[in-house]
Amino acid sequence: MSDARSQLQDAARIVIKLGSKVVTTPDGAVDEDHLTHLAEQVAELTRAGKQIVLVTSGAIRAGRAHLGIRDQSLDLPARQATAAVGQIELMWRYREIFGKFGQPTAQVLLTQLELSDFRRYLHLRNTLSTLLREYHVVPVLNENDSVSADGVQIGENDRLAAVVASKLEADLLLSLSDVPGYYNGDPNRDPKAELIPVVREITPEMEKAALDSGGPAGRGGMRTKLDSAELAMNAGVIMVIAHGREPNVIRRIMAGEEVGTIFLPKAEKLRSRKRWIAYAALPKGRITVDQGAAKALLEAGKSLLPVGVTTVEGNFEAGDMVSVMVDEAGRRREIARGLANYNSADLKRIQGCRSKDIPKRLGHRDFDEAIHRDNLVLL
Ligand code: GLU
Image 1 (cartoon, protein in one colour):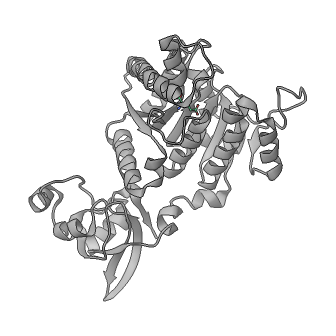
Image 2 (cartoon, protein in one colour):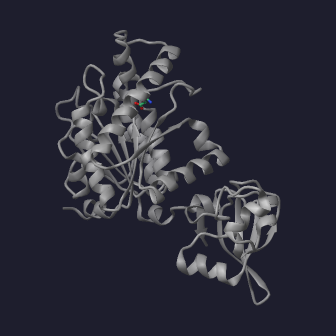
Image 3 (cartoon, protein in one colour):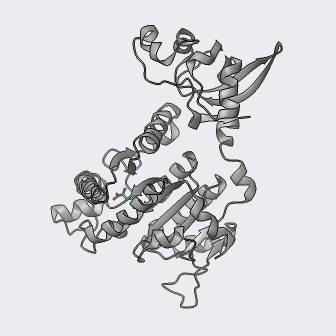
C-alpha cells in the first residue's frame, strides 16, 4: 500500500459524488440493490465517526423513467421538469435505504448562488455543519435542477462536489461514476490507453487530451473530472476517481487499495487550507475579545461566543469576514479571522452577553456563537 493511499483511512470529512449511472439502472430507475450496497459502506464510515456528504446525480434519469419518457433529447424546460419528478424518487429511496442501516439522510439542493453569494453560503455551511456534527446525518446534495438558471448540464455535479469539498475543507473527495479512473488516452478509441494510478499535477497536455476526448461522454467524462480534480487539489483536498459499480469500492479505497486514480495535492496546499477565509477578502470589521475568549479560541479550539466580545468596530453584515483582536498589555493584536454570524449592529447589542440572554436583547437567537469555529482561522 502506497503512503499516499494509506493516509486515506484518516480522512475525517469525505465528500462522495455518485454519478447518474451509479445510482440508476440502465432503464433509469433508481437502482435499489446498488444503492443498498453503497449505503452499507457509507454507514460503516459514519459509525467510525467520519463525516460524509453525498452529492448525487440521477434526478433527470429517474424522472424520465418514472414518467416513461423515452425521448433522449429533451429541451431545457423538460429536463428541469423531469428533474423535479426524479429528485423525490431519488430522495425517497435514499431515505429508505440508508434508514435500513440506521443512517438518517437530508436533502440539500443547491445552485451556483449558494456557493458564490457569501451570505447564502454561510447559511449553507452552518446547515451542513449542524447536520454533520450535531445530528450525525448524511446530507445528500444535488443541483437544484428545476430552478437552476445555468441550465442543467451533465457533469455539473463533478464541479459541485469539488466546490463543496473545497469549501467544507473536506479531506477527501471520492468521485464515483462510470469511468474507472484517469487514462493516458481515450480507452474507447485507443486500446493502449492505460489507467494512471497517481496524479500529482494536472499538466496542460492532460487538459488538452481530456478536451479531445470530448463527445457527449466528455461532458460528464474526463474534462469535467479533471477540472474538478484541479479545483480539489488547489484547495488541498485529495480526490479519487473510481468506478462506482466496482464491488466494495468505498471500503477498498478507504482501506488504501489501489482502486482508480488518486489526485494528490501538493503538501503546501494541504497546509494552506482555510487560507481563503484568512486572505480572500479584506476584513469588514474588528471584534475585540477578552483574555478568556482569546484563550478559548487559541488553546481550546472553541467558537467565539458573544460573552467574550468587548468591542465591535466597523459596519458589517452577517457572513462578512472580520478580524478578531485581543488586547495585550495595551497593544492590540489580530489573532484570528472569521465569518460573523451576526451583523455589527446586532453584535454590539449582544456583546458581553451570555448566549441564553441573546433573545432578550435581540428578540431572536439564530446562533449561539458570534463566529463558529468552522468559520474561523487562527492567524
Ligand atoms: N443534477 C443532475 C441530475 O441529478 C445531474 C448532473 C450531473 O450528472 O452532473 O440529474
